[in-house]
Image (cartoon, rainbow, N blue to C red):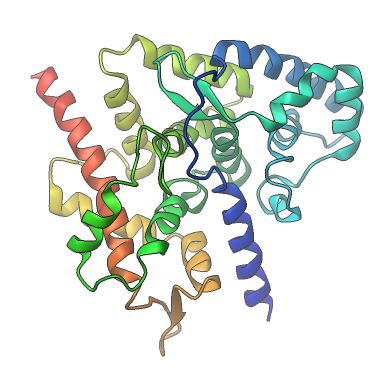
Length: 307
């Protein structure tokens, strides 16, 4: 009974974390620089609050304030402990200009791309809250979301791959796994590690994106950092080995397994192990293959440049 309740709770949380949705990027997306001005004011208030309230964490206060309106679900507490309504009220009373941050969608990065800002903050906060990059709250959960509409479409992973490819990392913001989510997932893993290293959210974002903007190939630098953190610097040039590693990392994640079980995309076999349903196996393999091929293609260009 506990397992069922926890699985359902985690599933609802993941749906909230992945609620970025298939919306087109807005042309008037504010810049990251302008957005961080507000985040810094919020962080200063969080520091003041934590100084007066023992046990409060400024990073948790900041992340929960930003994400709480979109992810309006008590299950967010599974990641960071939930919103502190008393702090939120005090912060907005002190600085009413902070309120629009809670409904912010896309922001324009120094690299020229747009990223779903609150999805990015949620991904970074998940890594900080769990103490490690959490696959179900970043790329793993998005892969499940991408695969779900293709459930039962075909027993051939290659056919599912073709069907899903147009929705994967689409620059126009369309589909169930748009580019704005892909960037939030990759960058969120890196930012979560910076938060664990003691940086404030604004400093982590400023430093990370400044380095990306200075890189000869920002996409490659981003992908290289992600592969190092998530897959231990795997050799993406070895297609078969990298494919196996990505799938293993995806499927052995406890959060991913609970997500699959809670949504009846998987069951439990006679050995008590999670077994993916036959109608979900091919689309899930296809979704992970899209991750594999994108990372491999981007990093292949980087290695050619370094030779």
